[in-house]
Length: 528
Image 1: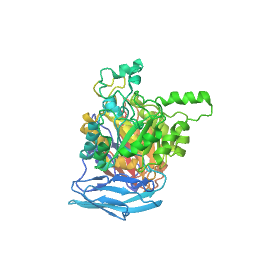
Image 2: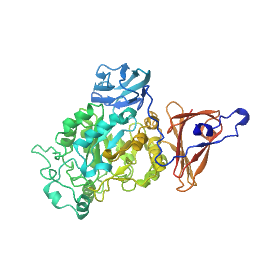
Image 3: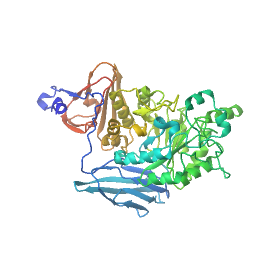
């Protein structure tokens, strides 16, 4: 009620009497309400897949279970589990668009939504979404943690808003005795206190296939477990001989590894520069014309030839402008900078860069990736056995972080210690309309229309012609009232305002909206 009273309904005779909307956020304040009992379908309205590939997709849908699902126009190559809302089967071999209508019903209501399968050479027509193990688990990642994450995705509502991928980062392979014995001193400090039992030994079998370490006894069983939820699974490697933590890389084994990932059932590969940088420099010592892209091309080719779509997540920290050449290799996402878990406070700087100088390179099928949303508890990369600790971001900064990744069309991946996840973080990440803004099929990257005096205003266009307004106060100490002239956003008449974080329709507003924000605060609105 407090918030609704703060926003005055304007009339033609009194359009200048605008009051201030109070969008301040208190410490650990949970803004996202619990989902209603009625069905609400979320996530992407279109989905890209290559012809003839194996297919799995879970319809993101909130509401009290059981929910019954129907699809009007489902192609005969695909099957729907009407109780789970999971689509499986084979993508049609004919390229083109396959429009469908998804219907979800329970005892509280019935809802429908358009959905389009786009069969062609591009996947990731909206930014990929999910969780990655690195920030919260590092060396300690296991099969059990991957399965537990899948359970949490379903039990806590992540799958219901549209999170899809559950991804292993480094440390699932073995490290050779030679590599283990010659690790540099800083690696020894990073790994001090960790038991490498079952992780050191032969790294490949007699056929050349990479061998998982003892923490992953059966990769196929693990991916089957996660696929049974309708979710997808990601894996990790490096184009060099070793990963960043000195485990087995893919150099010289690209085809074998790509085949193996597909046979195990993986749907994404994060491919990390690591020791590949030394290999790249060595080749350039022989040939100055050896391009950066040559290091990544073999894996890109072999992934594209697999029986299932495997999304290529390029991780080489933005060297030599991957946004200019990665799309030509069929790569869907590429990192624009370094690891944010080392410098999580740089989240705003990275987002603004994508919203300004790099925004033209993001579009359906290809996305600038500023790294994961490192949220809640993380491990320290300098000594990985230490318990995970809370990130040094305030509540308001965490709302800023997630808001920014939503509106700049960043891959909507988060990383944290899944064993320690709390209710605040769950509700922070499972706001359905924050996800839906990120997954909007237009793929428009928010434009920065003001960035001065600690005030930032960003606008994102949506496919239904509505607009997203994000307003940020970057003062660390002072509250701020920020005025937004709606005419500059293209609105000539009164507009409907929806507060995305609080899930509230506010009223009609004319000419301008004034918003009061906490230090490091944010307001996120949809205007129609």
